[in-house]
Image 1 (cartoon, rainbow, N blue to C red):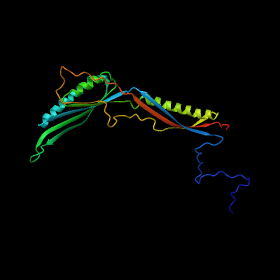
Image 2 (image 1 turned 45 degrees about the vertical axis):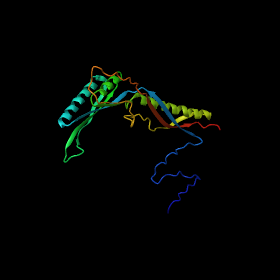
Image 3 (image 1 turned 60 degrees about the horizontal axis):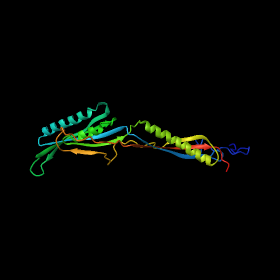
Image 4 (image 1 turned 45 degrees about the horizontal axis):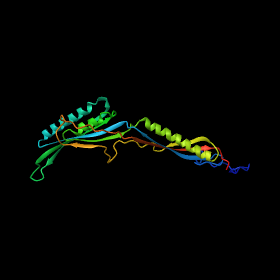
Length: 252
């Protein structure tokens, strides 16, 4: 005989899922425990920590080995100019190197008209004092192009942490303002969610060039061009968090 599941004390048992797990708490407040959901935001403006430039060295010649020799010489000259700045250079790397034959537009067979060579170099600087002088000297080299500088922050910059902490403080201030408007106080923090805290991975923004120079004359001479006066671009750091608080029941 199956026992009657209906309780005899007049109370209805709590409903539980079939697997026996405790049902999750409701994602909203109750009259006895009201909740406040707010978003805290922070916007900071700070000085950049890194400047990045890209250097493209080019060579062209009718003979393949001649073009390669010119490319090697110009690449070495560009690297030497960068490395003379010592500790100011945090990162220096050579990217793709290409030697491409240019076929004659008219004629029979695979007759090569010329050879084109390119080397791409990336350099990052932490000391901006002599950056204008270096960029000018690089742009004055034979068949050398300079793009940049692009200003940015380090991924672990203290500015990111400061923005996140300020966003949390702003969330608390905003929640307290709502509670004060209801003549009550906050009682507990229920949830704090980091939602895309910042967007400062610059690295190189598309279609953004602070400076671009291309030189197709002779190499450095006694009459060097005047160094460019570069003004570092201030960096904007954004952070925001979502927070939920409980508060004492207000008297409405």
